[in-house]
Image 1 (cartoon, rainbow, N blue to C red):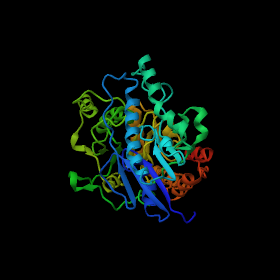
Image 2 (image 1 turned 90 degrees about the horizontal axis):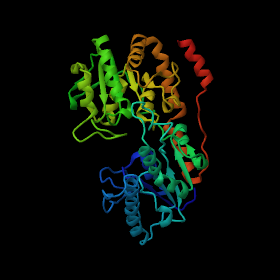
Image 3 (image 1 turned 60 degrees about the vertical axis):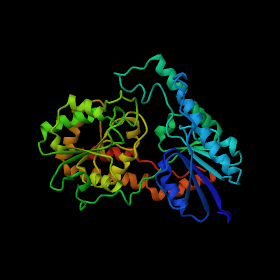
Image 4 (image 1 turned 180 degrees about the vertical axis):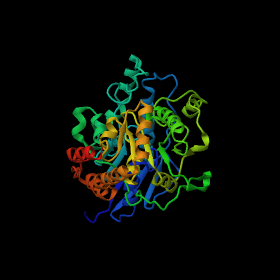
Length: 427
């Protein structure tokens, strides 16, 4: 790198989001001046200067509902533009701009800083058919839904056109983008800190803050998500717990996540999927522990003590939590949906189950609980998969190189033929 300090600007309304590892690393690097444009006042990273912005108003209620999200994105982009324009007048001009596409915050960066290298994190492209939107047969799409979803990509398409390069964390997520733009997009995961997320049998599941003490429990089934919603299989989880409670009187269940909808359609005010499912499926609440949001250290305790970890998702964005659980040596019982199957091979580094079939999910959880010897190898292969393919120590330097040059990084992949042979022997 040349002796001249480079200026990098991250853009994401939620600080630091997917840019946490990069921002922490670059904030310590004397070769960089690091800025982060965000709406979130909370949180600080050493060496990172926050630039706060706030949209002037909300989208107008009279705006056509197809266009209302785009109006919100334009207002977001306008707010970022104005905040940075004031700095530009004082001499601020970033060498690299790296923003998360889809919020609108990045829309006008190429107009304000035409000479900057502008790259985007492309997490998801919305499709009416073939992914998340039409996955549930009980929720058929209307013509209105199809039109709304098509228009929802407007801001993302502007970023695809404007940026020099883009990045998606998985091949599945990249494949959602229009073929004519995929040449611009590199696949590179954010990376999992495998030095932090690792097995530790000597870290008992005791969280005094929420009065949780399971140090004497021998079977703990875990589930982690940001919210409690159909996108992450929460209704199927509760039905699965109901089935397993009848079969296994000593098993405890730890459900990590907030009682809200993080992805998908919102419920009417005052309603939650937790309340709906608990009315539908009566549970022995003494053996089901809803933790709410946890700190990283508390969350790590949960997955380090997991006897079996359930991860369900529609064909959508793959959660970091699944890979963190694998790195920690969990036996992941995952939905046989495309984002999961990119990482998990059945009976090799995890166990796959049908998303909509709680009975089969319960059967597979029982199989894992009843066969701890067989699970040892699966736990080892789960961690090995993350250490070899998604290790932060390996991917962070590649990410930095891509930011600087746009060159494709070295990529990893599972030897699927070899893995399936291993799985057949294990079965």
